[in-house]
Structures are given as structure tokens and as C-alpha cells.
Length: 244
Image (cartoon, rainbow, N blue to C red; front, side, top):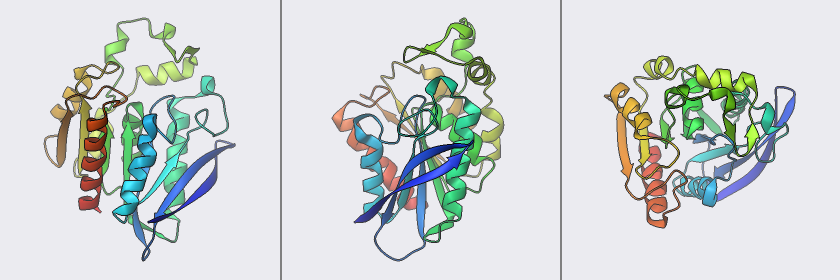
């Protein structure tokens, strides 16, 4: 159903690695850029990103899964990761897709999860994207601002001051307004132990049109429930196929 190839790109003077899934058939084809969560990677928990890419290939849609610097197989150290570096990596990946001869550059979509969803919004506001899927999307740092954010650790590692400052001032409202006409699918894990309902509620307040909201009733942040995994994959594939 597809041809899968490894891709190496240069971003910020370092190598980032990705996997391009190309469905068999006539080109050019639509494509979806995957944006993993903070500290995540291009495969995703339970290989959900791989499985999603395979499902999209079956629907005639290409996909590009990348590791941002400091994550997965890409160069760099996680402790040096910033929101700016991840945004730069996503822009590098989008530019690659725009210039790929087998990709229809007018039909590029983005799929982001957790913090990756918020960063995908930042990037999409500066590119011409066809549609977006946000899975367990973080909205901003407000729930953490009352805590001492400088003491915030992730996966046992201290984060750089630059990263913490960017996180504390993350603005999702402005780029969301710029994407008001872009169709979105937003999925909430109702048993999310990482992100409170606050985040999903903010998206509901700001996205009154061109948006499908889906509650994954039994899902946690990583979507470990098998039935909800299937629902997530099927719902996302159906939406992106309709948008393509």
C-alpha cells in the first residue's frame, strides 16, 4: 500500500530524521506532517503514529513523521530543546514537503499531539495548510504559571531557562485566530492525567466553526485503551480523507 523511506534534513546546524510514507498510486498526493509531543518521538506511544501513517497510506494520503532535535533519532540533546527549535524543525519539514515532486503542496495538513499540537498551530499560521488534527492538545502554560515554573522538570531532566521562558509565554490565541478558516479535528482524552480540561475548554471557546470536537471517553493522555486507539485512528483517517 505504500513505500516507506528515511529522510535526513538539516535544521539549526543539526540533523533531524524522519520517515516518509508514500501511498502507491498517481502523484502528486496530499500529505500530513506529524508533530510529536514534548519528549516524544516519530513513532509515538504504542506506535500510534506509525499505525496512523499506515492507515493514511491506505486512504491514499502520504505522511511524514519526524523527530525534532533532541528527540528520537535526531541529533541534539533534550536538555537544549526549546519551543523555538521545535518550531524551526517543523518549518524545515514543511519546506521539504512543499518542494517534494510527489506531494501536492496545496494539500498539506498537520497532526500534532500534546505540546506538539500547540506548536503545530504556531507553524500552520505561517504556512498554507489544508487542515489540522490536534490530539490531547495543550493550550498554554496558565495551569502551571502559579507554580514555580523554573523548577519544572520533564522526564527527570531539568529544562533550559530559554525553554521555560518560551513555555511560560506561549500564545496560542493569536495563531488560532489566523487559522479561523482552516478545518480542524480536536480530540480530547477524557481521562487525561497530564492536561486538565482547561486546555480543551479553551479550544472550544475559540473554535466556534470549521471544527469537529471528539471526546475519547476512556482514553488517558497516551491513549492506552485499545478501543479508544482504534477510534482515534479511524476518526483521524476519516477526517483527513474528507479534507484531502
